[in-house]
Length: 184
Image (cartoon, rainbow, N blue to C red; front, side):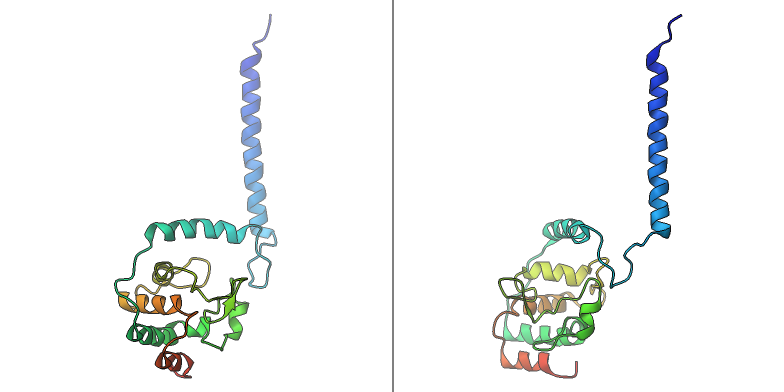
């Protein structure tokens, strides 16, 4: 009597698939539990770690970006400078004064008054103010950047965002004085 070859081989393939999934899951658990995962700030990042985080972050910011409810002015910059000194300078520095420990954070806190990249962009001045506002309001998971939506008013978040958008331009004297003062 001839055996049906189809039903027996399907069961073996299915069992092999389940066994493969179980082995991979077990291996992943063992690696996470006992493996040398990069959890210290000084550890090298996982392959493609920055790219994996940037893709959904940028997509969400693009979907939710708003436009500033007011225009730039010296008053806006002065108010933004006061907010910046009190809430941002401890990690992101001030003009001419980087924060030494910021480079040892993971990821490191960008110094927002310093030129970076090939084009010499200052801080986040190449980002739209709405993008900076989103980051200030919502924070960025796994980066150390907190959400300020329950700390600052909407106007204050816009003031600091508009100030940072213009960090590559010459700012009025009073604004520079506020940013360079030693007390918040």
